[in-house]
Amino acid sequence: MSEIETDQNASFDAIIVGAGFAGMHMLHQLRQMGLTARIYETADNVGGTWYWNRYPGARCDAESVAYSYSWDEDLEQEWEWTERYSTQPEILRYAIHVSERFDLRKDIRFERRVTAIHYNEGANRWDVATDQGDSASAHYVIMATGCLSVPALPDIAGLDDYKGNRYQASQWPHEEVDFTGQHVGVIGTGSSAIQAIPVMARQAAQLTVFQRTPNFSVPAQNRPLDDDWVAGFKKNYRGHRHNQKYGLNSGFGDLKVELGETVPLADAANDISEEELLAGMEARWQQGGATFLSLVMDSMIDDDSNALFANFIHNKIRETVKDPETAEALCPTTHPVGSRRICVDIDYFETYNRDNVSLVNLLKNPIERITETGIQLADGHVELDSLVLATGFDAMTGALARIDIQGEGGEKLLDKWEAGPRTYMGLMMSGFPNLFTITGPGSPSVLSNMMVSIEMHVEFISKCIANAADKGADKVQVTKSNEDWWVNHVNEVANATLYRKGGSWYLGANIKGKPRVFMPYASGVGPYRELCEKVMDQDFRGFEFVAA
Ligand SMILES: Cc1cc2nc3c(=O)[nH]c(=O)nc-3n(C[C@H](O)[C@H](O)[C@H](O)COP(=O)(O)OP(=O)(O)OC[C@H]3O[C@@H](n4cnc5c(N)ncnc54)[C@H](O)[C@@H]3O)c2cc1C
Image (cartoon, rainbow, N blue to C red; front, side, top):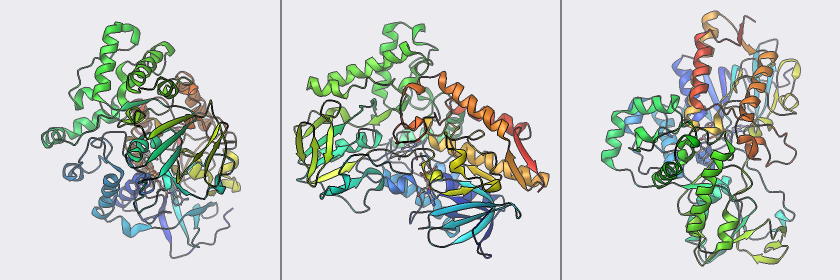
C-alpha cells in the first residue's frame, strides 16, 4: 500500500531515478517513444559517477572511444576525446554536453534524493517521494541509481576523531585540493586509490599508503589520441560498436580490431607454448588496458591458467619496485587475478620508488585507531595533514537498499533481498510490477564496459514498455519461479568461474553484515545480449503482460 500523497500535477508515464549515463539515455529513449518522463537526481548536475568521483587522477578504464554512447551517430562522430583514457573532467563535460544537446535537463529535477517508492495497487501506479518534499506518480519506474554510487566508509575506530583534512575519493570537493607541502595518508588500494596515488605523490611532501589487500593492476599505456587514428576509427564506428556488443571482451572492444594488435587468442593457456603465452602477455602489457586477461579464454575459469597471468604481473611488480619488501607487499596473492575488477594504472607501481612515498602493510602492522592527528598503528604513529579514504562502495544494491521501495502487498524490497538480491535477468523483480533496474544485480553490469551494459538494458526496457502498449497491457511483471531460476543460473555461472574466489565487493564482502552473494552475471556481455535478443524475439518470454 502506498502511503505517499502524490502531487496531481506530477503524473508521468515514467519516473527515472538517477541522472548518470543510464538515466539520461533512458529519458531520451522514452521521450523518443512519445512518453512523459521525469528524472530525480541527488546531485546538482548530470554525470553520476563522473559528477561525484573528482579525485586526482580519476579517469575511465575502458577506452574513451568505447566508453561513450553509441545511440547517436552524429554525437559519436562529432565528440572529440583527447586521450585514450579520458579524465573525469572530460567525461563529465561529455555528460553535460549530451544533456544539453538532447534537451534532457528540462525533465530532470536536481538536488532531490528519492526516499520512497510505493506501488499503489488500486491505481496500478508507483508513488515517489523525495527528501525535498516532492511527490509524483508514474506508471513505470526505472531505477538508474548506479552500481557504484554509495560510498563505503571503513570500519576503523576513531575515524571521526581525526581533526586534519579528510577526503573521500568518491565525494571529492568541487574546488581544487592542494596537497603541496603536506603529509598525506591514503587508506585503500583499489581502483580509485591506484589512480590517485601517483598524482597525489607528485604534489605531497610525503605520501603514506595504508594497504590491507593489494590489487592487480595493468598499465593503461595512456596517450593523447592521434587525429589520424581517430579518423580511421570513426570511419568504422559501427563495426567497433558491434564488436563491443557481441565480442569476447566484455564490451571493452577487440584489441585486434581497434588497436592493430596481432596477438592470437587461444581457448586455453595450455593450447599454446609457454614462449607464445609469455610473448602474448608481454605484447598485451605493452599495449595496455583491461583486456589483458582475455589473451586466452580460460584465464577466468582455470586456476592454472589464471596463475600464469598472476605470476606474470608479480614479476612485473618485482621488476618495477626497487625495494624488495615493498614489491612483495604489493603482489596480490589472496585472490585470482581478475576476480576483482582489474585496475588500469598510470605509473602506480613506479610511484613506490619515489623517496616521498611509503607503504604500510596493514597485514603486518595493522591500524589500531585513527587519532586526532593521524593513524595509530600497532607499531608506531603516522602524523597526517590530510587523510584520503578510497575504500570503495556498497556496490550494486547499496543505492536501491537506501530507498524505501514497497511492491505488491506492501512487500519491502529490503525484506525480499534479505538473503541477497533476487531479480529476473537483472531487470525486474517479482512482486514489483512495472519497476525496472538498469544494470541491476543478476546482469553483467560491473563485469563489463558499463556503457555497453547500460545501453543493452535501456534498449530492452524501452522495447518491453512498447510491447506492453502494443498488447494493451498495463502491467509488466515477472514470476517468482522465473526469478528463482535466474538466481540459480547466475550462481551456477559464477561457480564455474574464478570470480567466486575474489572475496570482493562483487560478493558484498566489503560491507559488514551484507549477504555474501555473487551479484553480477558472469556470462559476458555478448552471450547476455544474445539471450536478451532471444527473449525479445520470443515475445519477451519470461515476462508477463497483463491488462490490469
Ligand atoms: C571511480 C569510478 C570509475 C569508473 N570507471 C569506469 C570505467 O572506466 N568503465 C566502466 O565501464 N565503468 C566505470 N565505472 C562504473 C560507472 O559507475 C559506470 O560506468 C557508469 O558511469 C554508471 O552509470 P549509471 O548511470 O548507471 O550510474 P551512476 O553514474 O552511478 O549514476 C547514478 C546516479 O543516481 C543518483 N542516485 C542514486 N540514488 C539516488 C536516489 N535515491 N535519488 C536520486 N538520485 C539517486 C546518483 O546521485 C547518481 O548520480 C566507474 C565507477 C567509478 C566509481
